[in-house]
Image (cartoon, rainbow, N blue to C red; front, side, top):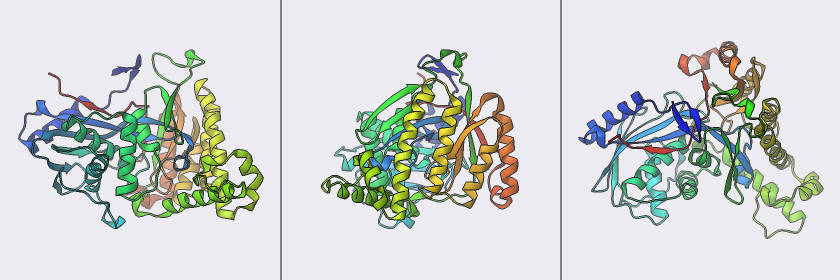
Length: 432
């Protein structure tokens, strides 16, 4: 166990995981294991604020106690040499080589994110004279699962390259460097929720990011009721249930289509109010303007706008519920977010919706929704501590009945996970 912000937190990564990473990199680089640094980038969940970050809304996030590890040593000549614990092959290139954005989404693979990190730093004007020799590994079975493993990978490479080149970049600036990887290099029109969560989270707090002002703030759990925090522990755990549906989000343009629909709704509403010169984002539409003109929107655009404005209200209510430790209200808001994502944002699939509905019936679950974009991956739930294992078994059993074929492809120990809140991304240096 380690201590952060005065609280006891579950230790991640473990000493065994760190030893494994250091030995892999020592073998790859012919260096001593005591020279190997390890970047730890946790996976994230978004309890509230689904699909509104790209519209400048306020989103919430926290990390969990597992994620991506990147062991590395700097290379003096700019060489980048990488291997993966989950994918075959080896990546070799030089940090000084100019990088160009990927034109065909089908070309995206595990190697793309390292190229993307170099691209982002080059675009930001940073001089990369040194490279890295490293080994990267996430949790087997959790990539492409809706926990933002892609952002965790991108940030891991950014932090390693920055350290190797003695470049100091504040977390807020790294958020936008990761956005360059996702938006400009990979071609995914997402917002800043994922990197904000990974870089800014604090154990015991819910991170809020105002995606319009780019300002984060944090709310401590049960700030108004310290009795709900016993021995540094909280009255909830995080349940993650996996659907068995996986794909690479940049290759699926349904995500970008909905972003475009949100912008089209914003443009129509702003035009109706005479603000045609304002940027077409829903955060620039006053709620009164939305109420006055929402009836003029085409059906799909009306649904996207309704999701945005209702989700914005849920985030505001969720802050109060979290701060006073009202898990019943907080959970209900999460479930309402999930239903709006299905009905109004129209993401998900038959299988994901089945999993979501099973999750809500599990004992001790306060609330749940899709994790990530919702087109594939997993669902998340906030569950009472004393019911977490029972709820996990219920979801595991019921979803296997509903989707036996999909479940058969998920490792048994990864079908449903019980997790705890985590901290932020960091570099772990060898003990001297």
